[in-house]
Image: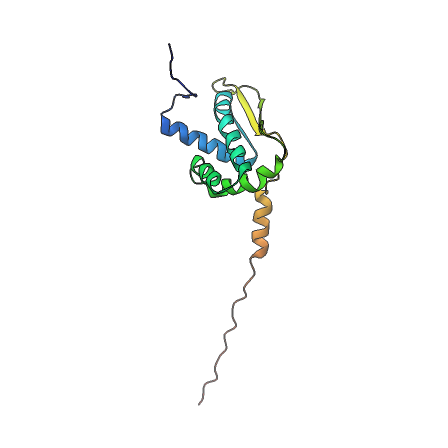
Length: 151
């Protein structure tokens, strides 16, 4: 008889489980989709939807709650508040979907792809790297001026 049992343990201690959920959520926000097992995706889906709802509300309190859930990841928090929220202006729930994939060869675990239901415009990392390369200016070595010796 399992009383007062809430959530999924996934054979982990509480700190390890919290770290796993934070990293999966952060990866989803930064990349737009993640490939993981069905149990992990179902365990993290509710918390992701709650974070998007908090971000839609806006405000300093919501930002602090999201940051605490993401282990103080500022980059993921900024993307969530600026880009992900803009993709869901009229939705109140159902921000993520889970798509089944073939089973994993090693242990026959059910694999899934978790992604946003709407198109979220994320910056491509390759484009970001190209813009950084263009900004760097080539610096030519200074020409040495030889002083004439007085004799």
